[in-house]
Amino acid sequence: MNNDLFRKESFDAKKTKVLGSVALYCPPFRWLIIAIICALVTVMIAFCIFGSYTKRETASGVLVPEGGMMNITAMSSGMVMALPVSEGDSLEKDDHIATVSSEISTRYGQTREAIASQLEIQQQGLNNQLTNLDQLNDETLKSLKEKESLLQQQSVELNTIYRQRTQQIALANTQLDKVKAMRTQGYASNTQVEQQENTSLDASIRLQDVARQRIDVRQQLAQTRQQLREQPITYYQQKNEIQQKLSDITQSMVENESRRSIDLRAPEKGTVSAVLAKQGQIVNSGQTIALILPDNAHLQARIMLSSRAIGFISPGQRVVLRYQSFPWQKFGQQYGTVTEISKSALSPQEVSGITGDNQVKEPMYQVKVTIDHQSVQAFGKQVSLRPGSGVDADFIVDKRHIYEWVLEPLNALGKITSL
Image 1: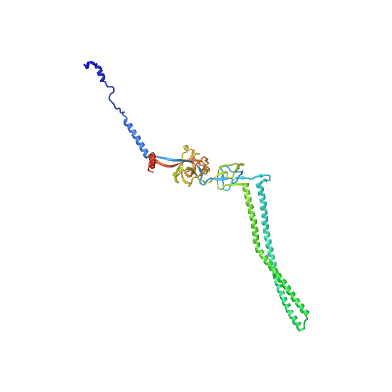
Image 2: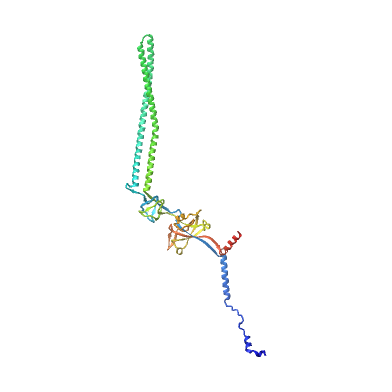
């Protein structure tokens, strides 16, 4: 009965399946794809294990001679009166570079010139005094020697007279004794005795006069000899005083001339690298007028590094250099070696003075780099490097494998955790 209730088609429809059986499709080149994927994974793993990454620190600097440039600076404010040099000129030592004048004009004329004229007059007067002093010294010595000779002669004569007067007194006394004896015997009168006494007294007085003259001559002779001994000392004292005055005037003349005009000369043999002033220009004290590059000077790179990177820099380290005047994309990179690192950081003002960069805001260390070549191959010829050229430098501060860079945060985290 149930079979008659539903039609046969309904039973057949229920027996029909909507979904078929699962069939897996494998393309014929599936193994090639699997091999490529495995190879890529292997290469990536090998790259992480054996590959490395170099961390570089880039800094800027400038090329300068190893001994530094010779800066020709004005010693005082004034006007450039002469500037006979130009860029590229070869100079010998002491060659004239410039003349700076600080002459001031007043209603009396050129002040420095007037001062120089007065100082020359004073100098000439002192030179005349010095000449006259020499002549006076010669005349004084000659006069003293003549006086000494004359006094010596007088002394000899007075000694002779003194002996004669002494003999006269002895004879007068002897004669007086005889007259007194004769008076006792009645052969001479009192008048004769008195006359003889007067003769003896007169001889004594004349002897005393000669004695005083001898003393006077001896004193004069002693004074003359003392003057002869003192005259050279007096002469040299007076001469030294005049020479000291001459020295002071000469110093004043030099100082006045230095304020009036200064000739700037080359301290060493070299080449004019730059002329920073022109004739007729007013310059200040300390202002650079010209730069001189010493002959046979080797250039070196002076690089400024911040304190963040200086800890990884050491002498002997190789450096990659890129000269701003020779683009590295066209002329390639150059190389050098670190030779010296400053012991202390330079202030921003000092860095600006070396590099000319006024944008520096933090202390920096100076690194000196000896460059491998003093020229660059450009357009088929060697072009010499010029001082003052800008240079960029790459310092290799750290080199690690790739996996070390990847794991570095984990290592840092482990160290922090251990603390």
